[in-house]
Length: 254
Ligand code: NDP
Image (cartoon, rainbow, N blue to C red; front, side, top):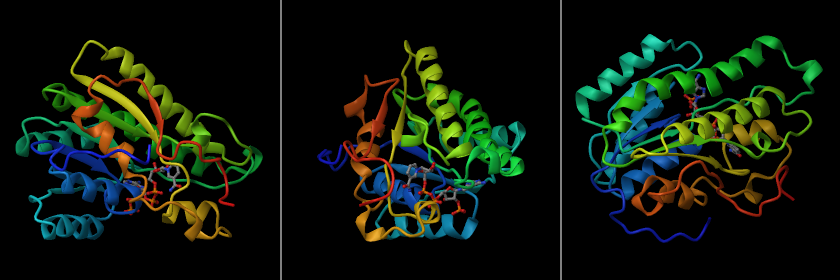
C-alpha cells in the first residue's frame, strides 16, 4: 500500500507507543503518527536519539512525547511491567503499539551463525517483544479500539539462504501475531504485521553494503500502511501480514 490518503486528523486523540523510535523506520513512524494528531510514547535504546525525536515532534506543534529507554537485549519481564506502569501513570490506555525495534544479527549461513548472536537476535526480536506485549496488553485492552502492530520481513514469510537468526525471528514474529489475533478476535484489539520491504536505513545498509541506497524507498515512502493499520480505517482488520511495498521483489535493489 503506497497510495492511501488518510484524513489529517486520523489519529487525533490517540496515544501510540513506538519501540525503536529513535532511528530508521520507527523514528519516521513516530513523527508520522504525531503529524496525524497522535500523542506519542517513545521507547528505544538510546536516550539522546529519543529526545531528538521528541524535540522534532514538539517542533511540529505536537504534544510532549515521553521517552523511555529500555534495552531489549537485557530487559526482564519486571522491566517491561515497570515500563507499563510508568506508561499507565501518564496515559489511561494505549490506542496503539508499534513493535518496530529489531536487530539483524549477521548475514551468514546457519553453520556460521555465532550462537551468542543468534541468542541476541531472538532475545531482542522475539523474547523481549513478547514480554513487552504481555506487559502492555492490559493498557491496549482498556482502549475503545486498539491496534497492535509487529514488524516482520520478507524472510519471515519465505526462508532465504544466509538470513539465519533474523529470518527465524521474523517467522516467530508472524506466529506471535497470528496467535494473538486469534486470542483477541472477539475484543477491541486488532493485531497485524507489517513487512517494510527493503527500506533506506542503517540496518538495510549493513545487510546490503554494496547496494545503492538511492534505489530504495525511504521510511517516509512506506508510511501509508503504518498509518492505515494504526487508524480507525482498519478497525476490522486482524491477523494480517501486510507488505508496505506490495509487489517489491525481495532482496537487493536492482
Ligand atoms: P534501524 O537499525 O535503522 O533501527 C532499529 C531501531 O531498533 C533503532 O531505533 C534501534 O535503537 C532499535 N533497537 C535495536 N536494538 C535495540 C535494543 N536492544 N533495545 C531497544 N531498541 C533497539 O532498523 P530499521 O529502521 O531498518 O528497522 C526497523 C524494523 O523494520 C526492524 O524490526 C527490522 O527488522 C524491520 N525491517 C527493516 C527492513 C529494512 O529494509 N530497513 C526490511 C524488513 C524489515 P538505536 O538507534 O538506539 O540503536
